[in-house]
Image (cartoon, rainbow, N blue to C red):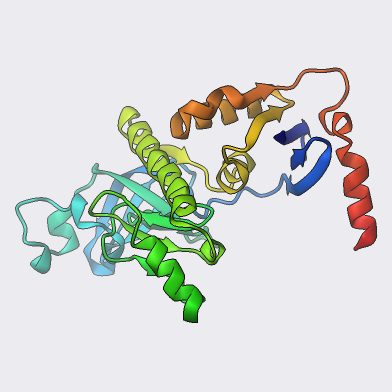
Length: 280
């Protein structure tokens, strides 16, 4: 049986291993350091509209307010009494208005983070843009026969109108069924983001792109993985909650590992990692 193991007992490092029996198939580490915000999704509140900059400033729950250009604001947020083609930012966006935003560029010096309301969520094989109907296609890096095959598989995918899908290079050679699995995961994730955003008031973080738990489930989990074993309470709770949101049918596979033998020792991971690094 395949298992996903997450070791988080060291405060400065988290480790992920995919094993079959006791054979190591994949391994990844995350070092604690400066928190990355790029890709994070927030509920934000407009604090100031600046017509001269064609932009607004928003409180998104961090220390410094973010910068949101007019061209990065979806028409879904515009006041309904102004024609979008003639809209100016001061006519369609108001102070105190709620928005969903995603960080495009990190804070630099005394500049706040650059934000967008055109959300994109990356999966293993595809990226969805839930409020941008005109952004889809196949990655420009994919050419020739591979591009044609991937486009054919993409044409079979089912998803709501008003969204667009981009195929990633990792999607090369994948069947329509595999792409649909990834897409369904992202649709559930977006639904969970929307629900969480509507449930809370004010400005706050909804979804953290850089979390090891989220990346692990997105990039490695599939129906072949029988257990997800985690050795700390906080990461276990995070993984369980995330799975209940996006793949509730698999949530029982998330388990708290509490044996006396350390998790990675139990599956002989330490030795295999040392051997792998010794060969490189």
